[in-house]
Amino acid sequence: MHIEDNVSVGHPIMKLATAWGAVLGFNSWGEVAAALAGFYSLLLILEWFYRRFWRDIFVKWGWLEPRYRRRSDQYTDEKLYPPR
Image 1 (cartoon, rainbow, N blue to C red):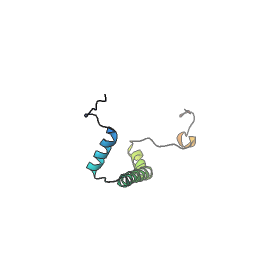
Image 2 (cartoon, rainbow, N blue to C red):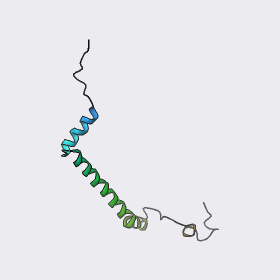
Image 3 (cartoon, rainbow, N blue to C red):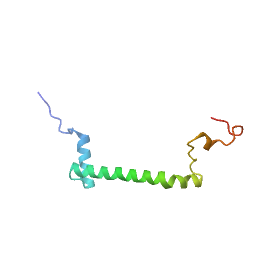
Image 4 (cartoon, helix red, strand yellow):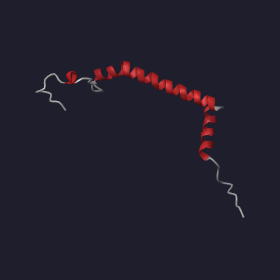
């Protein structure tokens, strides 16, 4: 004899994701993909601004340490600043 459990839900994660998608206004997977692509593009744009402008400003304000690319940029006198 097989007893049905009327309380359990099949694929609960998928149903939860679909419910949240409906709450946010997504009607198809194409709209979800477009939203994710837009979010990813926003992250790339913000990274570009950070590397191009904001990092230099943060270094100038003293919030970040400058990035050294060569040993000669970091050490001017080997006696005062020994290599790490």
